[in-house]
Image (cartoon, rainbow, N blue to C red; front, side, top):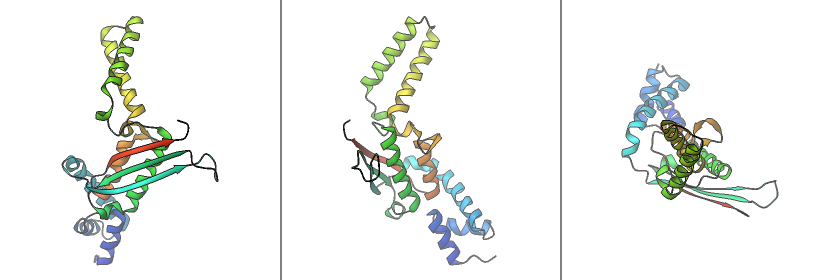
Length: 203
């Protein structure tokens, strides 16, 4: 069937993918918009994983989230989040706007301290390793088990304090990093949390 400019425009609005990618997907899907959208996401997603590390996210948005314990009461928790992408066009996309909102809500609930593993204080990790090793030795664990216990403790620290490593509050089967990657595949651009700040009254 003939693919119209309106069809291409509609698919581009849904996926934020390049125009030619949308046109090819529509042709391959015989004009079926839903099938074409799936094709675009599969194709751009596969490319994004390989290219993301080499691309620069120089645009983006800042999102604020305030949480009140009950409606009508003053907010007790607030989050300020900077979500970066490659173009201002994608920063306006509904999927990216929703991701920023959901990530801010996650931060409010899960209380991460840093964005990525490399930002964790090495002193904290050393203390956790030392404590885990000492405890395992006192319990008479063999050396190869002790090292696994220490590795597990470090992993737990990352899950507790590193945003990207935390189980996503909206879907416990994936991490925050995986949730971001899913949206990244949809919009076809690199997405990353540049920074965040969490405020809580009384904390």
